[in-house]
Length: 121
Image (cartoon, rainbow, N blue to C red; front, top):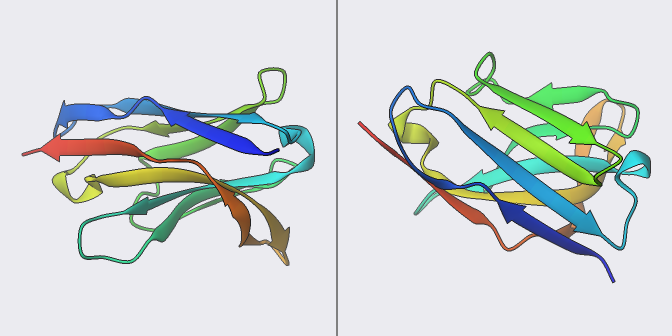
């Protein structure tokens, strides 16, 4: 049974940093692509960053230069380092186990429960 558990969300002032973690069980991250999504109230869920099993990464233009996705295969955990946070980054953040097709992340069926990130101005 695949299980993804996010942690690390919280309340931070604009300009601050947070690091989100997604601990996986039931799958081996070194063999899987992983993605971080977010969903703000009244908006669609959007892909923020993704990493392939080979280490290729995609980052959304809205967070490029501020967010970094990484993976620790030994801990079976994927991270999202978020710096220079802005109020518009406020959302619930979810991790997803998916795949890659021609350098584009493909959403998979497995989701975590989400972690709330709130950035105050």
